[in-house]
Length: 349
Image (cartoon, rainbow, N blue to C red; front, side):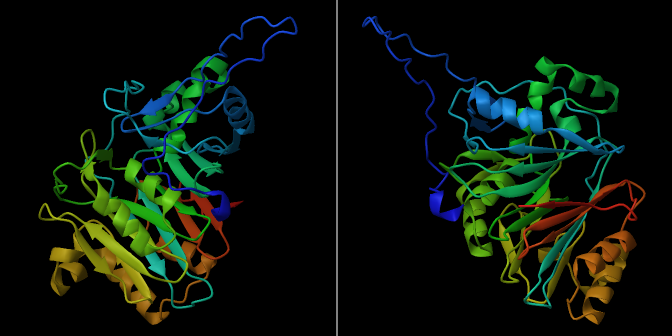
């Protein structure tokens, strides 16, 4: 857990163990080096045993379909310059992610983060990550971005093509770690701040780096301040970050500069407009923001996981693919797919 974690940033992964020499003193032969898994700006190298155990844990939870997998290998790090990422044809999508994310922290004993992922109907994965060199986490992944859309689900029946599931750790669409640090994103207009000399990271890779290394909102803000975000191949985004203390912040790039809008410790909500540049009239004109704000205000920000899921149901759209509630102190995630709120899947760290 936390005691065994050393910082991810700047840490190199090592593989390449030497085989033992034979009993007659013959020269030792190098063992086969595990294959590096690289997707966009992140890379990592699990051992063959770690990869096999992850794939063996893969199971189907429902007919959305929603799957679950447990990964216990090394955490992703920044890919070295010149690294060749895995080439996967991305599924076509809408013009906007159009999601909703909120923190309800009126009850200090039970802050929760709720998130609707509004996008095309694609297979999804609940990924439980237990790396030896980073924080444990739960995250959700749209599997079409790894080449497993509905037309290509048969790939999951073949061991060789199933191995692309191992790249899932690089693509968290939302998630929570063992310290109750949670992140959700939504599409919004913006332009990423270019920081001279800073490494570029993908728009989802930065969520992975935060989940792996940050305990608090302040820690996560520093992660975002370290990099230039790369939104190529996808929409611009903003991010809601929350922690187990009930702190929260919305990170945006509405004007090409990173802004941090802090929550008041009771609740915070974002949809698909920039909080940092909006006024009261613009916020009232967004029906999800208006309805969510009204309910969160009326409850004083006190929503248990069931109440948070009920609010996500209220704020759903026709293309809401999953709704997830992260209990930031209990370390649990409750997931409903395809707006079927009568069936909720529970995962715990």
